[in-house]
Amino acid sequence: MHLPHQRGPLHDLPDAPAAYDAVLAAVTEEALARLTPEGSLEHPAAVDDIGDTSLGITSLLALAWQRTRDPRLPEAVRRSLAFHLRERVFTEDNPGYPNLSVRNSGLPYARYVVEAGAHPIGDWPSTVWALLQAVNVLDAAEGLVDDEQQDELLKSAVGYWRWLTEATFFNPQEAGNQAIGCVVGGLMLARHLPAEEGELIRSHAVSLYVEEIRAHRVRDRGALLPPEHGGAYDNNYGPISLSFLAQAHLNSGKEIFAEDGDALARYLDARLTVGGFDNGGPRYSEQHSGFESVLGLRYFGDRIGADLGRYRGDTRWGRHAVQRDGGIDGHFVFMLVWQIQDTTRWHRTPSKDPVRHQLRAGTVSVAFDDRMTPSLVEAGGTYYLPAAVNRQHGFGPVTDGFLLCRPMGETRVRDLRTGTLTAKLVTKPVVGRDHVLRHVQSLYVTDGTSLWVTVAVERLDGTPYLLAGLPYATDDGDRVRRTAEADATSAGDLRLTHPATESVDHFDARAETTQQQAAFALAADPRGYGNPDEGWRHLVASTALEAGPAPGAPEDLHIFAVRYGPGGPFTPVFEHIPAGLSVRTEAFTALIGDPAGDAGGVPELELSPR
Image 1 (cartoon, rainbow, N blue to C red):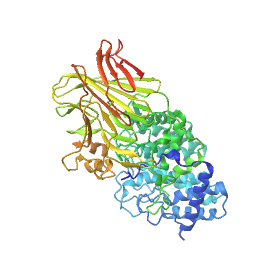
Image 2 (cartoon, one colour):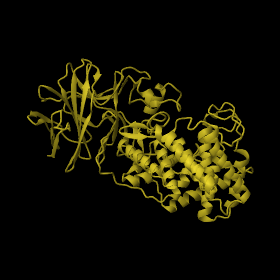
Image 3 (cartoon, helix red, strand yellow):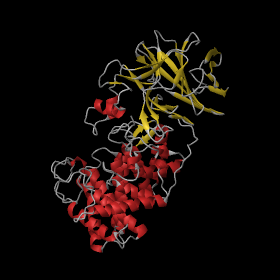
């Protein structure tokens, strides 16, 4: 079974001017065939996300006219613009809308659902989107629409801005992408107004960003990020925020947008696997956006020198939003307009700088969470998630049913590269049920094809094992598909276990249920509004790769050794010497220093290929 949303890397989509001209040509023909006598360009099946969709396609037709001067387009633009201004600009309060700060303001807004009171919760982002579509039309309006229509559209756009910032509470869904989008709308709108009025809106937009978005950033993995639906990052909406930050910087020149975009881009680069797979977030745990992310990934990938385009998008939305029949939907079209206008090229080579929360070389990568526990491992084309045992999630030694991966003190990291090898040593103090403080030293070494993980900890009671991940998905060329198999070898006994209980809080990788579906089923609120990350934390047990202790370890240590990916015999040798723990494998020799580190507390590591 393939995962529905994680398809091809977004940088694989052709983005030369000729490719975009072909997109605009196809949109033009479809739109002209769809245009109703009333002037609507909405998809016939569209029900929600409706308030901006016709206007979005209008903006694409206006852009196409700028590039081609197709004589059929001016009339279509005028008719469709008239439809939006006549039928999709609402000034009476939507019954039931909960986020008004001024009632009966008379200011225009766009509805998420056209019918009054049907589903008003989405009116705020729908109005942001309508504002952005409107300013894109205004950008292309010169010589295309008459002064009267242009003035009416500008008046509506100003009204949208005022409704968003005066008549309602700002960012009522706590969605960073929507809030930054609103700021972008203000910055772009300001260009179309007299100097004094434009400067007031421009200053207001920047102050909203500083006071309402930037001041509320959330820290994760060392980065400060715009909050998304109550969380630090969402793998669907986070890259969309990156696109909004790119457009904000392009339109304002303000370094604050570039700095925050750089931080978000570096964070995304660290958490993203080599193959572009990612999961996690308070709204969607493995759903990926498509064209909405291209601008930000391309723009900031170039700025920070990283191959962010490896991000696997939903290529069904590779160019624009579509309905089930594949027909164009104007929702989010402003992002397509912007990416066509931006001339940045994809940066296609990885960043060479070591990153605390990532190990990456060749086709192997490990993304680490805030606790420096792997959050995602990729090796041999397989993606591993943290496994679960007794409601505890992660990678690490398990003794008496207790997972030793949560730090009780400072976690220290040492990165090292030598020859063809890339390594990271993580030293973590932990406490078990017996309240004894122990030091877990985890060494990750890769040659770009396989990943060797060696975990050493003071001697444990009972029959400990290493919880070594949940094999979840595999790279199938241009698609990601589900798997329940692990290409791994252990120095000790290795077993792949599955939950004996069939229930919503026991995840079996052999089942058709995806991680996203399981996470939402465990969340407190309905799918689409609940927090899947929070729901997933209720998982009791999962499919798990479990490795027994490696033979030949020093008497005072338990050592676990696993190789992920291809290779022949795996018989590592361990030896305690005065300088620390010596580890010899078929590929390398490593010397792991004392857990206390050097005089400054820095972990000591020596590594050489064999």
